[in-house]
Length: 440
Image (cartoon, rainbow, N blue to C red; front, top):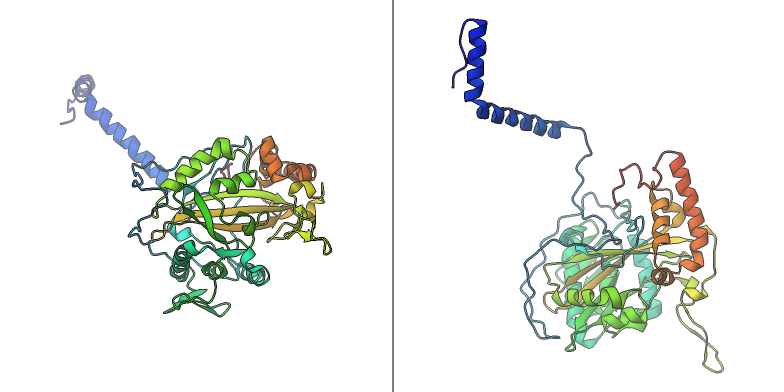
């Protein structure tokens, strides 16, 4: 292809017209390529937010969750029968710059503006993120140790048929923790050593020094539970270390099937919206496909382990007659409209994974606990939390106890939100300066 070369203006014009007619497509494609190149360069050099380390977002529990599509189908098997699978958890990278004294708890705020939807709210878990530890570790560790000493089997228990699964969980933790938190844990020939508390745990010698669920609970900030399938197709709670649950007790739920655990706790919408999906999930979940979910509650006292505002953890009896004179009755017994200083935001981050050898499904339940007055200082949080609390349906509101604290909580949150709007920190109905993205 050569360009026009006529000497006169008229001739050049005529030649250019002929040139354009003959090569219009080439010129068009060339211009399109130039525009695309300019756009690509602009995107590369345009100012914007720095790329953040990879971590899954906190789930949007207010909308049905779509997991990544997959053609995988769980192998057919008889209910209650599990054939061990040759699966090994991928090695874990050390947590970047983690320090037991300075690493702060992750700011989970799993709520948003209404409407509120009842869903399982699952998202895929990255293996590195299985267990989360932070500068609250020693507080959790000491509180757990005290409750194990005081309450024993009431909060840590393993059924005989679940012993292998509990040991498998303990082995998994002893493998994972030194990889993820090498400054806190060191692997030994017989188990694991905690460099902060100077505790060494032998998981090889039999008999074990204590119930494996007790030992496992001492290693992490999470509560732990393992569900096992029986021939009736139901999953039963047969191993647990439930020390910091706040509103429920292991002794009440131990040995129950999954459905009864939820119905006995009056979980709203369970039968109508959750039971079928939950049972299908438990039946199909595979060792290579761990998941996460979050939830949140309001608590009107500052006790991480047991919310005494709903009644005593243990029933009180008349010494003479043996009859119960005082027991936890739930939100109905809580004092109404306590001052905002008593209101705490309680959020759970739960992981679920199948153990490949025993087939047990492990829950880890990490609780994050903050005064409402503290999180309400964060941009966008008071307005969003107030909207979420107002959007709860009747069943959810009853389950979460809104009637006992809602007036005080919402008045406080509305005032904090109005102040943030006035100062320009958020727009009316907005999420904050970050542009309305659902926060981690």
